[in-house]
Length: 295
Length: 178
Image (cartoon, rainbow over all chains, first blue to last red; front, side, top):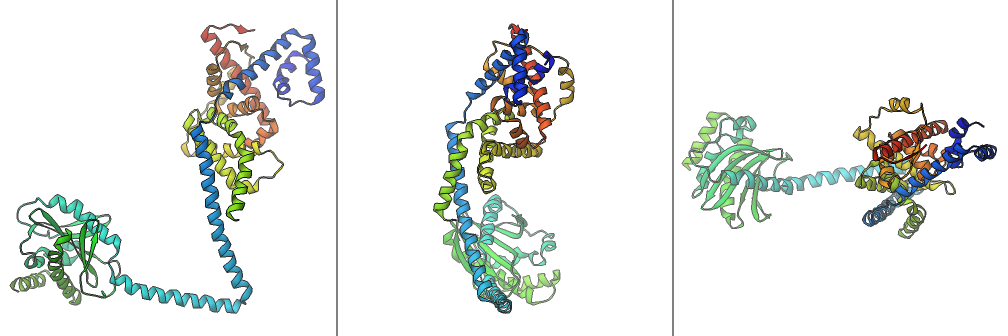
């Protein structure tokens, strides 16, 4: 072995990666070659330096505790998932063992029928109640948009463009006007809140703000009740009145329940009329409004 | 598996695996070069190891198996971040020509920063072989590269490291062992 080979293989020797014979050859060379002995001790020293420099670093106590905590959570989750899997397995076994394929098909059909029935049944319920999500959206729109416009002044009219969103939105402020006696109309517009379009009328009574909102219903089925459903929600009161296709919502302070009902009912009634009639033409709308106003 | 069985399994895993956490952390520190990221890498390594612990063959090398997981996690993170661009070949061309002297009298910080300056492809085998004392075979398995590649990267990586250290020593005005 010459010095070149020695240097090539020295690191592998130090890592104990060489065959026994090669180890002997390395040692024999080092015995009678001073510079290579020096090189060997230098590299040995470097390895020791590297290990020493790195060994001082440890994971912090917090990180180690966090690691154990995460493992525990993971094990716990695995355990719970395991429960689910075991039950699914048991149920599957029950079906497969105790029923032939024919019975299994009958059972599946029965299950489908049951689900369909449940769907129809809950659809009626769904039709009867305004969802909490919609109530929350109404409150949100009242708090953001309603409060902003509570100080507006001047002649308030629903813009003509509102009919492009929903023909029923046109002239809505005039429909509500007779019922809004004692309330000051501050704004009338169509606004979007969390992806939903509302026709929005903002009223004030002294320092109080009321919002009358009309929006499309999620479930298009005849409303089970014409009555107004009032729900205290997040420190405010939301009254909701459904028609076949739309929902009228009034957001007010909790003690303004009467004003809310007074405002919502005629609007809902007007919308039901529209939905029962066929087309909504501007002239017809104005005639209806005039009629309402005469009442 | 019941709560009790799961607890036992976890304790079994922890008693075997947690003793390596500082080693994993040290390697993670070298490759991440940041304490927070290194700790995250170690945590993710343990979570993944725990999740696939049923695939670990008892009696084989748990430490090497977990290093393999760690580099999988590390490299998939890199691919997401598209961080690494190392002009490796140029550096080698400059260094294979001579065997630089090994400097003495360097501080631990000098040594660490020299290690951190190595291109990742060479740094990781060097850290695993010369600091964590994994066998060449274990390194090949952990990095999923052929044994021959491990050896050539180690060879070049060590040379680069000695050169880095020599530059440090010259810069600091230290004597170098000729």
